[in-house]
Amino acid sequence: MKTLSIAILALAASPALAAVNAKEAETASQQAAQEEAQVPDKFKKVSDEFWVSPQISVKDVNDAAAMGVKLIINNRPDGEALGQPKSAEIEAAARAAGLDYVHIPVDRTGISPNHTTAFERAMNEAEEGPVLAFCRSGTRSILVRSYAEARFGKPVDLIISEAADAGYDIAGHEPAMTLLHDASKAPRTEPPV
Image (cartoon, rainbow, N blue to C red; front, side, top):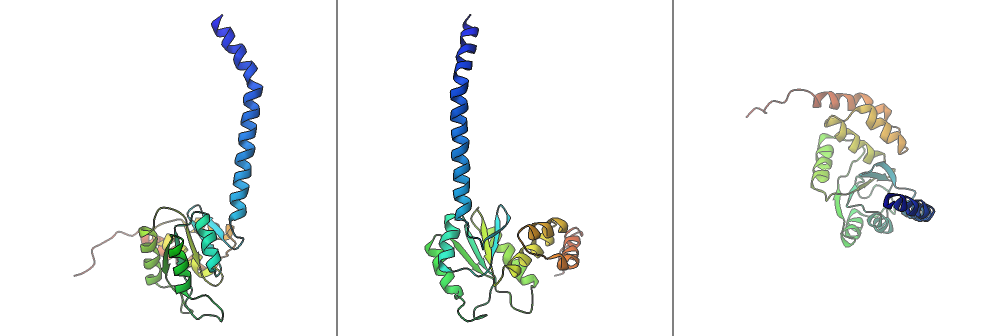
């Protein structure tokens, strides 16, 4: 009899529980929409932990902090264009917002192993959380990350797909990324003394 009473109570409570669950789902949906609305259109999600953007402003730094970014990587050299904020201005805003900041400028000579090494070091030393990298258009930033990821064995097709989903066509870099990827599989030896 006690089991039957519990079952009847459970059935009677079901509509009330359904209403509570529906309200919780609606609240969660609204909260997700608000969080999505806080992300500036220029910030492009590559993965849960990595975003790219064209040139950012001091205001964008505060938006990045509000969305949980922990590190900003600037891949743009100072003085590339008139009116471009200086690295020091963005760094000061980042530090004031409690964010780490690294300047790894990539000029017209292209991406070198020094860039990917600096990127890897910044990522390894960063506080746990999302990273926002930027340059003039975001392309150099996505490429520095892509080369670093390939170098550590991430599948090249996945790297290209993530970039495409963020709006960047880097398929032309597939041969170079494949070489880096394949080299990551080679046996390691100690460097000569």
